[in-house]
Length: 176
Image 1 (cartoon, one colour):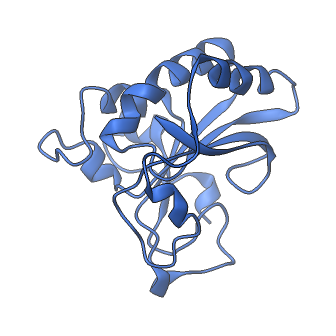
Image 2 (tube, helix red, strand yellow):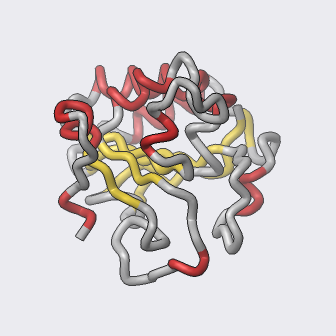
């Protein structure tokens, strides 16, 4: 897996100050995407153990609220296996910090074992480790710059803990 960028003090992609990893590779190709260069799975730099340790080390200060994973598309099957060890280490080392994942796939697609475009052997565990899923493709006709933490009105900010507990989609408090 490659990554396009890391922002160590990001305030745009989740609450508080966060470390954000922008992975490479996306098959959605949303019109007016703000990161079209990340569609290419080979774009950027290789993601390796040194990069992973730098990410985890950046999360140590108390003022860092958590980690956000964006893209490209972190839930592309090719990216899921590479990211799962990072998510496990993050939750083990920083249980009080939140993990946000941005995906063009909808929650319903990610939880459907028959939807092979996104569902893999790793998807369920990833969703259990994450706290919030911002789901849905960016839709240019629904672009709204006044929304917090998302680009278009069709995208949802899902509280994964509550959603998985109740079996029904529960939107995060950040959705309003």
